[in-house]
Image 1 (tube, rainbow, N blue to C red):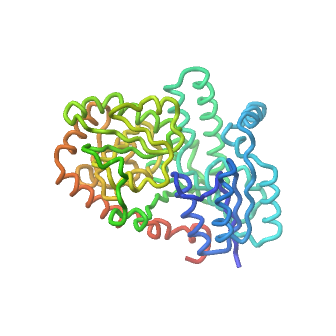
Image 2 (cartoon, rainbow, N blue to C red):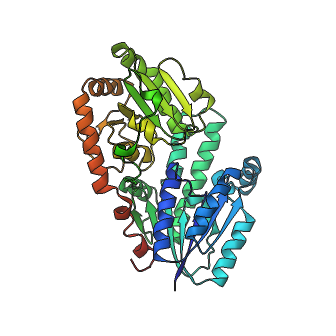
Image 3 (cartoon, rainbow, N blue to C red):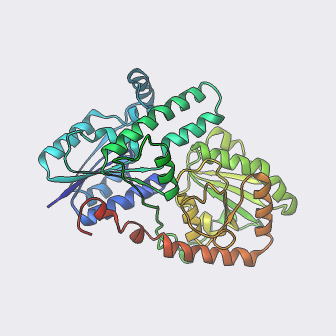
Length: 399
């Protein structure tokens, strides 16, 4: 029987951030179709808690410790390598890959995230499916445009080296996946030529049973007068930091002028110093919470004002599944074929965000209708079983 080797840059459990949500569902779907062997990197001791869930799904696994970032950075500079590749290099994982390919009937390798592509041996004769998810090199190019030195140089270097790696990997793979048609088209536009490169979009889904508002009690913090506006996300991720800073500094004063008790809650782990500095009477910074759903359930409005957004935003799908009205930037709406004004509201820039936020906050029936329409949309279009139905065929496995 054919077996699959699945390589990921971090553990997929718990599915509490965008990449883990996607990789956990991919792993489960592949494990339904074939025996799976799994390799990844561990970031810290907390990741050890994910091992029982991996063991329950996989025939074998190896989770190697990530090298220290400083050492990885020096190695990347010495080898003219992207830092984000050196940061996930582990000899023991490379040995596990070689042993598994030697001893098991592996017919396909599924690679999650471009950092893991170097683990695929050049002489592997089976099928290789590469899930880039997003075009990482374009993300670093965007970072470089706004960063000061020396970060600008570092981001530009990373973008240049990643772009070259991405093209080599896409030409090596039998199929390269991206989270949206837009990311797929962006990647294609950056290739020297499309010859011998197979690209396809495979979107993100939502667990609409878990994110069901009927069974969730809002947190007590959102029981006050309000209105309550919520942003969820990993709060050391630069695009999220930029988004909440823009909203807190440039949009909230306008909202507070019309709604004196309005509060903006920034919900997510690892808030940076800059994010924590935003906390004041009208801005709450929670840090890590055990569950984002009670925060979404209590929100009068969920916002995603991202100026740099790659792929499909899980935070948006989660809020929509929870029947919340969502105000988001055009970039954050990428890959979600919902209608502006019906399923969510799109605005770009602080002035437009403020205007559309005030419109929504002033009309509760409109917010309720939009939330209901949003949940209906994601149930119909973003259920994981529908999204991942083509995956076994992509790997050459029975459906």
